[in-house]
Length: 633
Image (cartoon, rainbow, N blue to C red; front, side, top):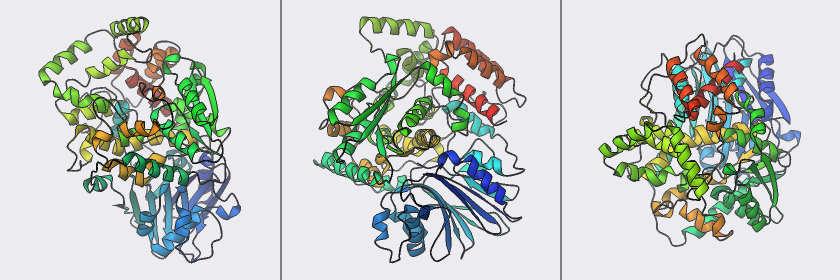
C-alpha cells in the first residue's frame, strides 16, 4: 500500500514540490519513496512494502519498453496468474511490475478486465503523451484530482496539494451542506471547489497538450452487472459462497509481511476470520477492540469466537479517555471533513493491529451485499403504513422530549425488557424523521442524511439548494424490491464514500494495509445473483452468511443484535465533551466566512444539552468541520 501524487504544468515541474508531496504522504508509505519527472509532468510515490521488500519494487516504475511510467497504490491479488501469460523476463516479484507489463502487453482496458484487487494508479504513456488515472471498481483506494491555474494535479489524499506553490483552495459550500447532513462528502465532489474524487470503476485520460481537457471513461459498472444478472435458487448456494470467499481470502493473504484479521464479533468479520483460519496451516492473528462501557462492548463475543476457531487473539479495552486523545487527530487522519463516529474506534483498532501485523483482512462490504443493515428490515414496513397516519406519528414523536425517551429506555433496561445496547431514544428520534416521507426516494435520501430532514436547506449559507444525491444514479430496471434498491444505492454511495473512506484513512494513517474479501468481483456478482430471500426475509438479515457461519460457531454467537463500532457521542456531548464541543460550535457559527445559519445551529445545541432532542449527528458534523477548518487554516 502506498501514497501517490503528481502534477502536470506546462511551465515545468519542480522537483522540490514532488519531494514535499512525498513527505506529506509518508504515513501511507513509510518504507521507501521515489520521484520521477519529465519536462511537464512529475510523479511522487511513498511505499509500504508488502510484496518483494527489495529495491526491485521501487516506484515510480517504468515498463521494460520505456513506454510507460506508473505509480501504484493497492494490491493485485491475481498478479501471479497474469504473469504466466506475459512472455518476458521479470525483474521483481511485485504486482506493480505485473500491472505495468500487462498494460504494455494487453493494453490498459484489457488489463483492467483481468486484474482483481484494490487500486488507484497514475500511468504516463510516453507514446501517446497521455496521463491516465484509474480507480478500482468499488472505490477501496482513494484518488483526488483537480485543475486550477492551468495546473492538473492528483494525489491519494487532499493534503498533498498543499505542496503546490500558489494553489488557492476554496471551500465548496454544496459539499459542506452535504457533509453537514451526511457526515461525508459524496463522490465525485470534495470539500474544495474544482477538486474531485475519481469515481470508482473509472479511468480519467488527459492528453498532455496546451488545453487541459480530462475525459472520463467507466470500465466497471455495478448497474450493468445487476441488469444482466440471472437470479438462481441453487440449493448449493451456501457451498458456492464458501468456495468463492475462501478463494478471495486465499488470494488476499498473498504477502511477504505478517497478516491478521479484524474480529469485532459481528457476522461479517467473524465469517472472514473463520474461513481465514480454516484456510491457514497456522494460528491466525485476530484483533478486536473492547469498550469499558458495556453497552457498546462486543469483545466477549469476539473472544469466544476466537477460542472456538483457535486463532491467536489480541484484545484491547478502550474508554472515553482513549477516544478523547485521538479526537484532535481527526482532521489530520481524514484530510477532508469526515465524521462517522466509528472512525475513532477504527483508528484505534488499526493502530493496535499494526503493532503485530502489516496487513489485516476486514469484513466490510458484507452489509451492502448481503442485507445487513437494520434499515433493510423496516423501511418497506414504514412505507406500507398510510401516509396520513405516519405524519401524525412523526409529529407526535418530534414533540416528545428526548428526556422522556431516555427514562422509558432506563425503565426498560432495568426491567429486562430492553437490552442495554438497544439505544431506544436514538432509534425513536431517527424514526421521527423517516415516517413522514412520501415515497422510497425521500425516505432513502433522509437515511443518507443522518435523520436530519433532507428538505431543511437553510443550515449552510449561500449554496446551491439542488442537493439531491440519489437522483444522480439510475436504478437497474430489474430492481423493483425496496430492499435491493437500498442495497444498490448503499453500494454506490454509502460504501465507498463512508465505509471504505473510514477504513482506508484510519489504517493508512498508521501504515496498516486493510484488505476486504467481500469486495472481490466474484463475490459481488455472486451476491447480486442470489434471490433477496437468501439475504433478507421475514425480519431476518444476512441469511446465507449466518447459515455458513453456523458451520463454525454456535448460534448464540450469531443471532445477536447488530452493534458495530458506534460510540456514545450523544451522551459525551452533554458530558465530558461538552466544553470542547461548545468551543467548536461557537467558533463555527462566528467564523468570518459565515458558513452556517447560527440561529439553527445554536438552537439545536441548546436542545441537545437540555435533552429535549438528540442532535448529536448534526452537532458532531459541525464540530468535525470546525476542527478540520482550524487544522487547515
